[in-house]
Length: 408
Image (cartoon, rainbow, N blue to C red; front, side, top):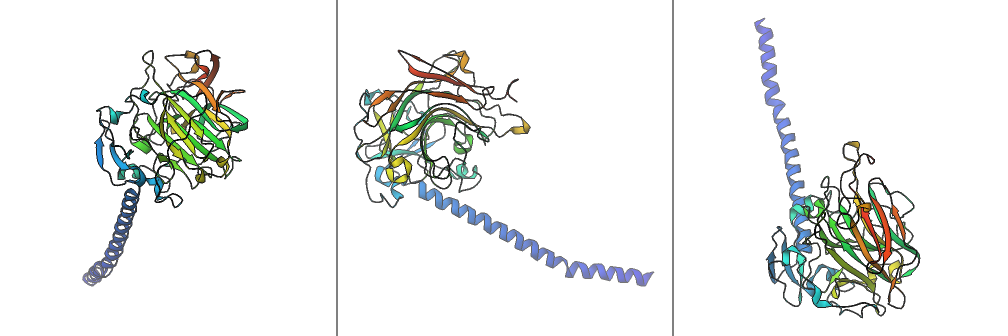
């Protein structure tokens, strides 16, 4: 017995001293590799932040937590693009014929400017991107970008749901509309709700070109639930080109009073005050760039024509309306709201709207819409109803609550 116990004890002592160091070494190497990978990822993120967060002449703290940097206009991210590196922003072209301009109409519609602070002339306000903003994205490659999804109105888009009005079958050179602003509820940080204008061209395959502007609530991008003024573009169907706002080399901002991506205030309330923003996108007939105007005369900037393939000439479709992401939480339809979160039948003060819809034609003139088609992918969840009158011109109410007894 004594001999047997000695042999067993000897084996245990040998095992502890000969095997454990090997396990410890492997564990140490694993931890070391994980630490290195985490450090490498952190450095890559910091490099990207340095690329998009440019040196500022002035910094403004917004009450919603945003930091607004006043960056020299020729140092904004757009001028990292080799096509325009070393240049300065262009002067605005002539507005479309029939457009009533009042540049002094702009009020403090964004939270960051409510204090009265503004960026100096020659600079533009840029919402500072933080490390936590990038970490909320699934990867650095997808940060600040939409996930590829079909746009065609004759198919149901997986995950993305729409209630839109659209025109197609002609050549279009811009669009204008006033968009009711709300703060819809979002079910989780991986979903969003937006209301926007789409300028579209291409074959709805890998060569799809879009220009987009409106308001959105996106906790993944912004880390909160405020509605925010935004822009977007892509030239390859959301694959490798394009981004939101100024998060890549694309849109050239020319205005020092509007921060793209900043929160909008005030917003509409049910049976209360109604607020809307007017957006005009039009193609400069002389240079071919696509310009963006907010309100009645405040030019925000432009998308250079070289960013696109099909949109270098004209658009083949214009869309107005709402979009949400439905991630089917727990196997049910999302309760993320579109617009006000109420169905269009409830009308003014309750449902969200687009009003005074117009197009820009080949003569650079604003004209009324013809043959506007209204489509809702899931009308029991989000619907759309349109009309026309002497005050609002072409208009529609749209949106809904998402999950309900008829939408599950």
